[in-house]
Image 1 (tube, rainbow, N blue to C red):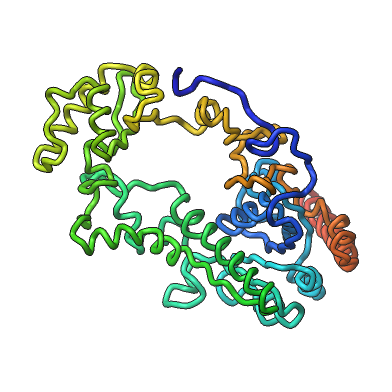
Image 2 (spheres, rainbow, N blue to C red; image 1 turned 60 degrees about the vertical axis):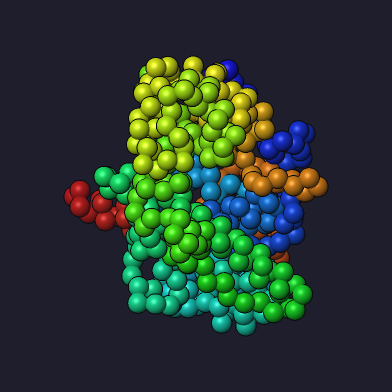
Length: 415
């Protein structure tokens, strides 16, 4: 069996056949207001929506900051969208009408912007004392850099996390935006707002959750800091057990230009690895750190003798802790992931299924990415906020007026 064999995909809930398309999951009944943004805020709201929360995204006229077709923005799946112009005189009141009925609010503005728009924590608390107000930023609400612009790469840079990833003789390797935006940001925001929601339900008291990517990313490195304090981790790249410095924990090129990932840390797994690889007799002792260079060279030379798929078949089902390195397009077809339904196909898009899984209240991909403003009337009715529908009409009228003005200006220019 090769690393790319298998093409079956599941539609809907991962590992749950015949799941109804209606709202379900452990967060069913939880209402979330998401003030439209980019990156970690939308991903956090998607995770809540995947688990059954009713997430209403407040989009602004004119769209967001990324030039991505909303049809393919998976982070907006399972949500509904309303269109509100927060800069209009009655815009903040429309959002506060939603807040009054919500359990959680998520915003990702720079510190102070939500306050200036009239939807900051104090204004929201006045309408709903039980509200959990989640703030997603890179630098946090306080500190010398709080008002500075930034992106994932800068946030993980100052935490020391970026500096520990990559080869020692090369620049640090950039892990997309997974370590900062999503691991250090979105996931910590979700943990924070759910913990605060539990507190609010017990005490009736809401609170503000300050989820800063720098804080979350630093927290992710807790074990490494402990190892460094104990003398078991060097503060440099490619010299440690888990950063590619160890010859039996890394990646190796194959004969066809593919790669295999090796993680044979424990002695019994290592023994099986070197035996199946075919270097048991000539491999230097694994605990001889001075010989790690020679051991890595021996492993690399052996992996170059076969293709990725040949090595995959050889190690399949063993305890050698070896796996093929697949591309994003290849991953959904891996037999194990296909069997589990780790990826699903919905609305013509192959995408990761909701995670984690629940035995009694499974999450699911229920709807395609929300289109800006498409659900305004429905949400106005479901949440009993008739002002939303009124605001939509006003917004549409303003948009039509702006379009007419632009058309007239173009005609004048043409003349």
